[in-house]
Length: 161
Image (cartoon, rainbow, N blue to C red; front, top):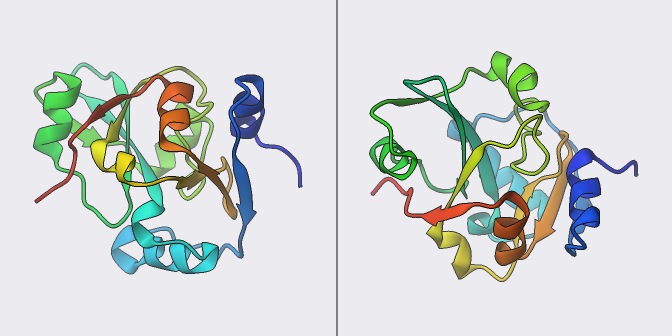
């Protein structure tokens, strides 16, 4: 398998990770159960699959949020974490130009530019988590502390209750 940019960055940081490939069905909408299908394909608990959400503030700053795919992001908590008044997800068709990744292959590791990154505190409840490997059909399994270090993330509460 060809290494993705995310893998090359982790290698450069000497961060251990495992790669899993899976059959990509092209369905990446979480509302349609993408996280549960992903966990099933990888043979992991659904709470271990972490999604990457790119959002834009009212000042046009892009921020990256990661949280377990079984949870919905709380926009109020995202605004508080980023210290902004407004925040909204970027449109899927904007992702590639802004981050270098497409929907279903977006990872917080190795975006085109360094964006402020926020990871939900529930990540620490897992020994390992799965994040996108930077392309559809590829997942990286990594220790939470290593992911936090790799993307210089702020750990905070993002879950909608």
